[in-house]
Image 1 (cartoon, rainbow, N blue to C red):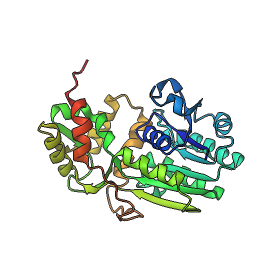
Image 2: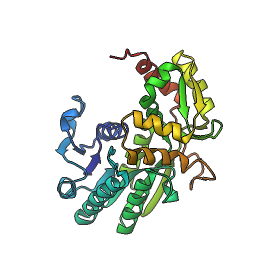
Image 3: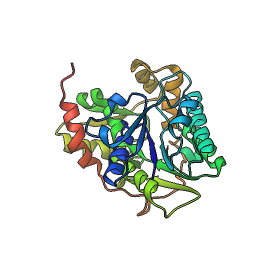
Amino acid sequence: MDIAVTTPTGNVGRHVVATLVRAGIRPRVLARDPGRLDPGIRDAVRAVPVDQYDADAVVAATRGADALFWVDPTTGGEDPLADYARATQSVVRAVAENGIRRVVFQSSVGAEKRHGAGEIDGLAHTETALDELGADVTHLRCGYFFTNLELQLDALRAGTLQVILPLDQPMAWVAPRDIAEVAATRLLSPAWSGRCVRAVHGPADLTWRQVAEILTAATGRRIGVERVTDDAMRTLLRRAGMTEGLVEAVLGMSTGLREDFVPEQRRTAATTTPTTLAAWAYDHLRHRIDEQVS
């Protein structure tokens, strides 16, 4: 089986690559900079330098592939949804022109809304575009990544996370490695066809208050959480260097799911994955928090 994998150095993609290699597959990996690949994996893959926004390059890089793991690349531009549309054009052309039979797409909880969820709307656009091709496609509706906490290391060191969601509103939290396991299973399994949606919910829905308690126990630091206004969060995001368009797109991922949102798929045994936030935080996050700021 010839499997192509995008974002092979990303939080999920690197684990997809490693899982496929362990399964006996030599995947082709589409990377903007193949030099960033883990040295231990380079000889086990076929690396192709590709800009995912370059549709011609993506078509060429995926020619002959039987299956594709597609992740829309992250965007830091002024118009994130336009960037998602460009990436969508690349994957649509690749699947259509190369006759790729199976696609696993890393989407998000909230994409089922289709509109009104900020940056997630870009993922929804990719979903619908892939659906229109009639290929066998699985959309992974992933919960909130544990690794998003690594974007808030300064706040964690200071002892207070700031969020705009209600502190007692539960949501799905998931480890990227668990998402990768689901993705690799779908890529390798012959037991599905057509259009599929598979939520990836992690082991438990957690409120931000519960998250703060878990992080306190796992890291040995007292970590609290406070709810701030939308405007206060806008200020924080601007200070982080985000463009105005990206600020609104990032904010919308929370505001769009803040009230009256019910996921299309409820938690089941099939959507529940094993890695707990406590285990991940102890293994990964506490070391990052303790790192000295250079």
